[in-house]
Image (cartoon, rainbow, N blue to C red):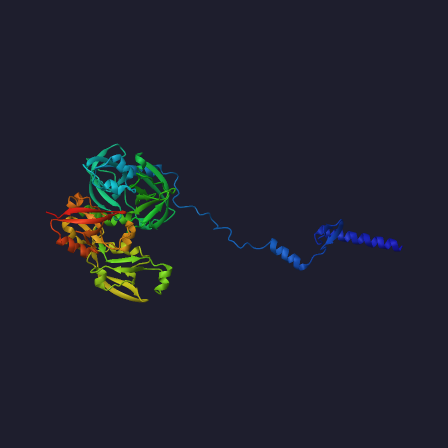
Length: 509
């Protein structure tokens, strides 16, 4: 009887355990060690259960699920064919030719141009010969009476400009005006019929991510359409001080220069200008609003007159911000005030941080050159600076900057460099670094008058004048004095690249 009761109890216990296992209320795991079976954590613990459940069902610490409705990009096109058809009549191919003088072999000179042997081939070596050089580019019509916009580098220094239209018509063009500082040029053709003009849009409202189309003449292949988006705005690529490029991934190649960047409304919002070497589909366009500010001047006078303040500025880095006790990195740090310039007369000092100019906030140091350039010459403006951590308001009268980037007062000098057909500026550390020279004295040639003795002598912008008549030149003032004392000619020692050479130049008349 006793054995029967024990057996019954064992049977009931087994049934109970089996029921608990079957319902998931009991976890039985066996671990074999050295041939023996061991029960492991038959019943477990509440703490272990909570930890396991927490690990298995923890809330994600990242964001999931976006907006309830999918974001469909506005203006998604089914294609660009209609836009291309509509705009093509206003886009032109530009072919230019120029006469190049050389006393060397044209083939060798072309091969070595821009390389370490450039100076060798530029120096006189006997009787000069002439040969023709040609290039290709793009442009677009902006008025029915024949005005066309392109890049300055497409038509600069050319003897002949030919414009080809989509219908096969070819017309000769005249250069109306050009602006090297923004790389914008205006040319004109005369036609018996009204031309189709592309409308100009508003580049200020363009946003990264918007669709754009580029039409141009890459590698001389004729009208070519590429599409992409605006990748970024306000790009600075080191081509000049008025840069404010639109970046796009619409394919731009050699020959596209001067062509239009068009939005889906068929409006030009940029002028395709530059590419990023060794990169895939990274191109840059001059904002059309930049062109709008200078096109009237190009049409009226052929060049652009800009405001001039007379300071050398630099970017405020975190280290400089800390050194000057600034709260941020906004503004333009004045590293030099040019003597007798508008800033000097207004009382600006090196070390000042310009934060406002004529009511415009200067957030980034590159904002200042563009803002000053767009200010009318002769206008009196308020300039707000931070000096020793305190705001100070000054009053400046904006000067005039000539189209070649130098104050116009240098052009009106009755003696000195002007008598020899030269325009010059002081050799600052920034200019020396840009030219790749290690000189700490001298002046830089910024312009050479066409047809002057300086041009005949072979002088060109970028040359650094070190001596006049064997006397060292320290700055522009010193150069004026020495060249003013010269007779009918002056012997200049110049640095060009890594070499130096003597160049005799005659006085005008």
